[in-house]
Length: 370
Image (cartoon, rainbow, N blue to C red; front, top):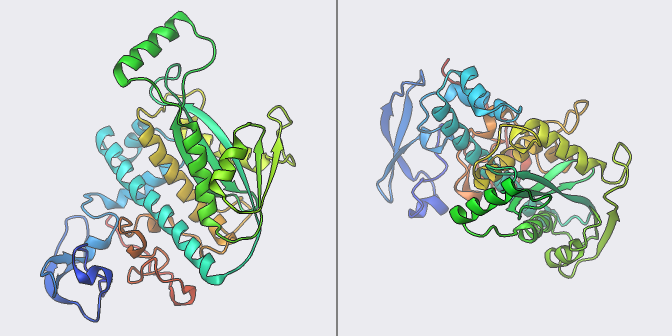
């Protein structure tokens, strides 16, 4: 980065509307993890100093060369203990690095989806969509007393994962004496367990409605759960909707109506050990389950191909991205500034607000220390 895009101070006028050369050079410094000196700057308005590293997603990292490997392991079904042995970190440090990367990557997916909505509104294209919704059931900390659901919504043709909302549900099934005692202990520890399934489903449908704001009809495919029509009406008010249902006991396989969403859930269970049915790789808190589900969605949407035989990612197939992102680009720039965050398809000087793909260059490969 030869020119900082804005002042990182949120209260500074040069953060929202940087005009001209709003900074002055303020020397350099050397970091132990990078061979080249890092430039420093001072804002002319607020007089605060910052550097090129301030805009990077790996700022404050002592071993940034491990980030890409950690992100690949997170998307490959590897647990924290085995992953920490593979990269040479302690389990605690590996967990902290994984959560930091997950926050940056999940914010990136949210920013790119909002950017795609603005792009769709500007193009004024009227296109119908086919989305599918299903609920995947897993658990947090204890399989018998703390189940959760994950409301997944995808675009059926491109396999673009729109939402994966996590919500708690009450324990169900056969109640043995041991299980009843465990549920009672959890209620004493955490209080009565709420049923967040309706809220999670509505949030997932609302994200689909925001991503595709076109007035064209939407075709929604789900199973035969009786409450889905109410959730759909709440998320798509005043919009023409075609809702097709498939019985839950219908055959599942290639060519069936819900094969895309069933396949994507199977891939999620394979890539994320914490959502497998029989696994030690469980999440102790559902906020971390939500965090890593968002990370997996970002990797699938922007860095991986739809199928192994494809060259394009789901984001490319929908016209939301000019190319696939490399794993290093998923966390290259910080994303906690919303639409003012640096765009990952460029060199960091343009923000998400820039919708002109022709002015965005791929950017040079990232140099990291060995």
